[in-house]
Image 1: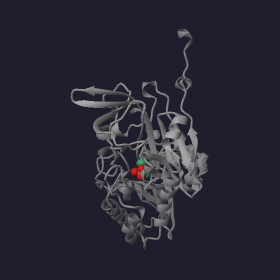
Image 2: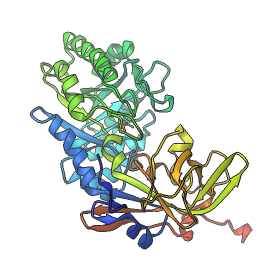
Image 3: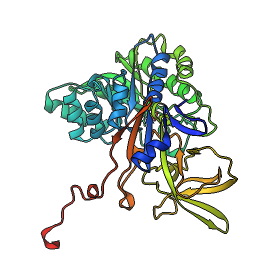
Image 4: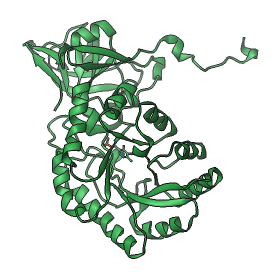
Length: 418
Ligand SMILES: *Cc1c(COP(=O)(O)O)cnc(C)c1O
């Protein structure tokens, strides 16, 4: 559910007409709803109420500081996958003790940064990484809290690019190798084994993969206990899907209900890492029609937002609903909505039946609050777009649109070219 709704045929973000924001801030622009973010976070809090848990928002979905502060002020922790994300999480006021750090390629510098901050735990993805963390912790004379990210070999039945828990995936440690790796971790002097982690993929719309993966993990926890390896935290990852089109993904409450029977006797602190299900439907991307173009077999609408601003359609053939800012009864036309980038793969929506669009009109690309701005780039030397947060009847620019001078920031011309 979200707070982008029509009132008298006009699309609103909470209490503000979207058109008003776009006219003031310009297009393209991402717009986030403060209220939707909070409602989604609270849905998780309520679902896991009454048992020890931490909700660690996955920063890679959306790392705008205003979004992070909204979540931090309401008790959220963070799941980070880089030193940059760790920096942003801490800067937004997320306590280090609520931060978990995953990712297959942590560098020595990033490991040291996380140790100095005092994060809750590293989710370790290989034995090489375990050795590196042990070495860096030793040089800093601290103990590193770690969990092993195990790969339970479960098919989450989602897009292959966002499946992470299959045998052929680069993520985690194969579950049948987990025990020997835990034994190894136990022996390393500067590591403290505190948890176990799994994350099987994203945009998962059924509960069974979560249940199946968790069963495998719990079996492993019991084996570890038999060996005298006691952990405190079970991190079940993120991945709950959202409705982009006609999906009916489970609510956090359903997830909680489905896994409760497995977790209730285990007596561990539960960590969740939702990204998309908190931020996805809390954001829209607004773009303006520049031109229309009729080819023998297609009608194109060319908009001012492209794949550098919103990559998901190009990268995953992702579907995003497209809505006019003002509802109307013009005749339906089938369009491909494409951006200005010099790539055939640059599209936001294909074969979409919409009330006919006119030049200068603005449209909203829905469900773009997660993996939208964070995946954007300067490709084709396009300044990155502005971000706005709406709260009630007011809106706030939470990131300025980049200027051309930002395109040369940090670059240098060697003397021989001057
Ligand atoms: C991407 C990611 C998440 C968040 O996934 P969502 O599908 O956005 O909920 C959580 N944990 C890890 C380790 C991730 O890589």
